[in-house]
Image 1 (spheres, rainbow, N blue to C red):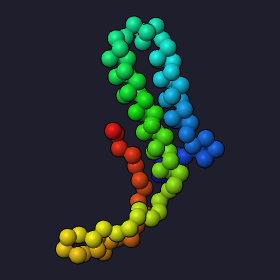
Image 2: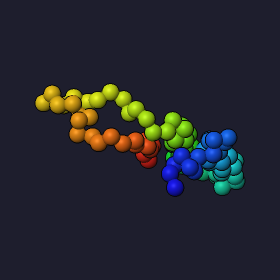
Image 3: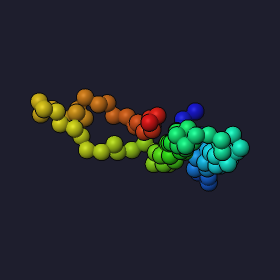
Length: 96
């Protein structure tokens, strides 16, 4: 099943919203309140980054396959698109 088939068009950012709610619950839990400043900051950084990654990924999925931008010309003057076969490519976010 493709990414487009898994995408809920009515609530495309629902995974990110669920991750954000989970993060806010974690941050307000008694265990988090006992963390050191640096441990708390690390938790916010890592889990917050995942929320942002989910938002970005859903944005890419909403855009769907399409133009990936202008062609790249190498230092040898060869247009990089000539070596590409005609195909649609889905963009994916990477782990930061």
